Structure formats: structure tokens, C-alpha cells
Amino acid sequence: MLDDRIFLKAYGKINLALDVLRKREDGYHEVRMIMQTVSLYDGIEIIRNSTGQIEIESNVFYVPNNENNIAYKAAKLLIEEFDIKEGVHIYIKKFIPVSGGMAGGSTDAASVLFGMNKLFNLGLNLRELMERGVKLGADVPYCLMRGTALSEGIGEKLTRLPDMVKCPILIAKPPISVSTRFVYEHLKLDEVKQHPDIDGMIEALKNRDLGGIASRLGNVLETVTIEQYPRIQEIKEVMLENHAINAIMSGSGPTVFGLFETSEEAYIAKEKLKELNYAKQLFVTDVFLPGAGRKTTQ
Ligand code: ATP
Image (tube, rainbow, N blue to C red; front, side, top):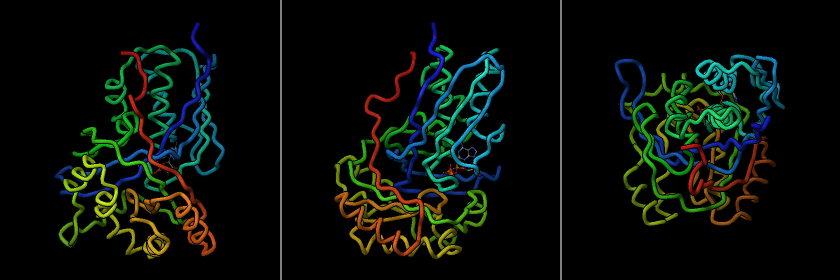
């Protein structure tokens, strides 16, 4: 007898480095990014039922509770491919800031693929789940893989990297809405003066050199988002004044993260940002490492 429900943690990501190499003729941007999973997660519960429908429920009103939710699309993809006649009720408890540059939607979708595979005994391995995930979004395969990884192409070419050094991470999402599409469309690559030293960061990861990693944090998309929203720069400065080893924006923003030596320092910086009212969504979290990875049927 198969279980009728499954609970999963859908972890968010930060970009330790984000570089854009060029705009391709098809309009997509070729990127080179170092991705890192963090311990901040959305709770996902999937319940099998006999309705034949996909139902989405969430604790926040601002994510869609219909076919526009990427978790719905993930369930639909497997239901159609495997001709599943039963229905599912998917409850999403959001903690990852929405539209924040932390792949919140992508990780929910990844967890739904993973959970449906288990719940309906579909027999897909991780690689097969990742092949399906990329149809939903470029970050979904990474969210299935998790950990420290180099992401290339349009985000779908993934190479596992040595694990990030564990450290406290402060996440701050100001109340600003940023469209990823807008940011990429307004990126003036020829004017970008500083590209992150990704190869140097990979070396620092190999050497487990937190200072070397932190000094190489970089995101070319800051040139667009910070110009539009100076608050992002102010948040970075508050983190740096409060002993962050370094701080940058994640993805297309507006979320900023800082790496710290101690969680005490991270909590002090968090309080400072709260006092200043620069961000309401504030979390002290840490590096998440998946160890042997997700267990899937082989
Ligand atoms: P990325 O880092 O991949 O650019 P993001 O973290 O900036 O993503 P998301 O939180 O994934 O952005 O949300 C982007 C949009 O997707 C929002 O407009 C949101 O309404 C919609 N959305 C659809 N499904 C979800 C979901 N399960 N969780 C969050 N947002 C979702």
C-alpha cells in the first residue's frame, strides 16, 4: 500500500556568484553562476485523493492557488505523462521570499516532482526528474540536485562543486518587487566593469577558504537592480558595517544576503535592519549541504 501523503522541505538558494557571459540570438542569456542551497525552506505537503484534480493551497495570498502556480505545473506534468487518475492536494507553506531571487517557485516545483515520484511510485531517478524539471524552469534541475554547484548555459548545465564552507547567512528581502525578466532585459553587458572571479571562487571552495569565497562574491545583475533600488545597496552596507564578511544581492534581487563568522553577528545585523525598517523579511539561516543527495529510486 502506497502512503497517501508526503511532507518535504523545499530549500531556497543564493547565488555566491552570478555572471552573464552574453545574450544569445534566441534572447536567452548565457550565465555562469555558483549556486548554494540555504536552510531556509518552504514546507510542501502532497496528499493523494480521488478527486482527479490538482488543488493548491498556501499560507500566503500572493502566490497563485491555480494552474499558474509552478507546483501545479510540476504535478500536471507527471500526472499527464504517467496517466495518473487520482488527484493531489498540495499545501505550500511559504517562508522563502516570493519574487526574491531565491528560486522559491522552482524549489517548490522540484519538491513536487520529487514527492509525486515517491507517492505514486513512478520509479524515476534523480537525473530523470531533472530532465523533466528543466521543462518547468531553468533553476528546477538545480533545486532537485541541491548543494554547491556551477550552473552554466541558461542555467541547466550543472556541475557539482566542493561543498561550501558552513557559515551563518543573513537574508534580507526589502519590500520591493523585481521582475527577473526586466532585470535581464535592462542589463547592459558592455558597460559591466566587474565580472565575478568564478574560477577563483572555485579554487577557494576547493581550499575551504571562507575569506577567499566571501571576497569573490559578485553579481552582475546588481548593476540593474541597485541602480533602480538604492535600498539594496543600503542593506549591503548595513550588513558590512555589522561585521558581515561580505554581502551581495541574490539572483535578480532584491534579496540581499551576508556571510558571517558567527550567528551572534548575523543576529545583530538582522536587528539593525529591522530597526531601520529596511527589510521586513529577515532570516538568519545557514549553508545547506545535501550530503549524499536526495534519495530516489535508481
Ligand atoms: P528566481 O530566483 O528563480 O528568479 P524568484 O525567487 O525571484 O525566482 P519566485 O518566488 O519563484 O521568484 O516567484 C516568481 C513568480 O512566480 C511570482 O510572481 C509568483 O507569484 C509566481 N509563483 C508561481 N508559483 C509559485 C510558488 N510555488 N512559489 C512562489 N511563487 C510562485
